[in-house]
Length: 257
Length: 260
Image (tube, rainbow over all chains, first blue to last red; front, side, top):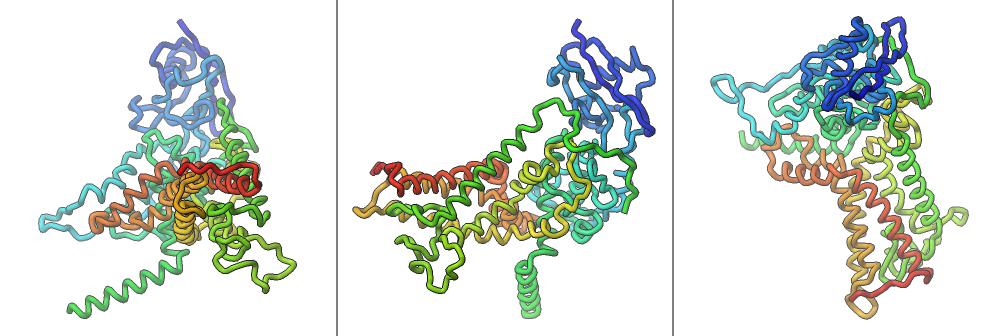
């Protein structure tokens, strides 16, 4: 039977190091299978978070050969097995133990974002009516499984550690899902520019590259939000246009009344 | 706002990636450098930029200049003697500004020229980071204004293609006509896929169903936008080649072939 060597990071918040494990591999195996096999046979105290093994829970996020990936969706056949495969915890979050990181910062960030605020219901029974073309854009963002791989790869969080000033791609997508929702009436543009720090994103598209749900984070989420910030803060002709439009709309309303 | 987790920084170039991650930034660095060097050289030449009914896209519109394509005649008398004059310098800032502030190019040159980051998950050289929140990069927000200019340039370059169909002996098609036509097609593909145009065409709406026209325009721009990087590189290469073609014809090194 074929074998492969895995360099797995072992340690905790105080520090750690890579340890080599050689294990048997079979066709169709993914990295998580190998890690669990090592856990079962060689390292019973190896900490690893997992749940669905189907790429839908976002629990088994780690860095495989230096790239953020879901371990359950990374086939061994896609990796160069002639060299040891490195498996380490996400770098943008503090390590709890071995491959497990503390991602609670993300949940604290999410609580700070203005929640969904729908318009008054369209029908007397308290329901709304939406067209498919209105909701298509938002449905893409709703595919997010909160694996936080995009947060991990984002250099603003990973290298510059600006967690206090920048909410990261995951939450920019969350804001996009709310801002572009056809029923939502809340305005989050000022926070986006100021406390949520959208201007720190320099469009490297790394978040899009690692997204296991293939959400076009940069092109469909972040850049359209950046454009909305431009509308509000950096486009004097746009301000003039909207002012003139409001004036003409109010005149029409007065005439009609 | 939110308490940051305590993390360890990686040093410049440090990564656990096993692939050849440096090829893409290297290719971008090489491609953009070649274009910048060539276009700067070509813009400062001030000669050999037209050949009969063809004009180099670097020099169009020729506001002042010696060629028959000039809108307002030769270099004006009030032009300061100490200041270098070339018709390209009067216009090239607009398409250059459009590309420099383009969302695709921004991401590409931040990586290739500024190593910010060099590639995904590769350690960076600097500790400080301002992003696009403060001067000078906050100026990237003028992109939509450069878009408006780029749309005007597309019309002007299309007129140049029309002129390239009319030779001294009447209607015809030469290799140069085809080169300039392809140039306009590729530049249109790039411009019509612009992220700012996508927003202005309909992306600003939360309810597309309220404006069918905006929704159609948004869908159309989205179609080009999905291949924005490809259009960006093809159009960049071809606009440089179009200048080279006209230049080599004007210097007599290449001979334009009449197909019709």
